[in-house]
Length: 141
Image 1 (cartoon, rainbow, N blue to C red):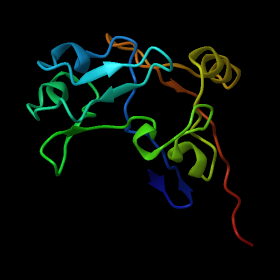
Image 2: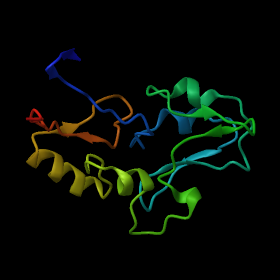
Image 3: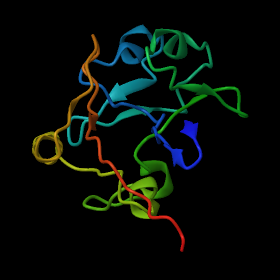
């Protein structure tokens, strides 16, 4: 956005919001989606999924995707990649600017508040907090 040399960039994560009241879970006719009690992640049981796409239609963030195996797929916090308890998902570990964080809701709320941020709003109560950080780029001399 903007014109050189006053150019601005905005980065946005489009992964699952792991909502407190996920719309995708309630509409699945076979119970393939669930919200985990231990960490709040919304996951797909790929053994149960029939690929009907009901979850994709219900999600206000358009997150679940119809995959190559003709079933639904979505971010599971890297659980399917073998992430262990206490570890962060790969997107968080590899973010070069440390813009992404992962942790308990209370911890994320506190961090966002310190940075002037807030929780995303919506009927599904997304478990994502946004904090705006302004980065000034210096001109090369």
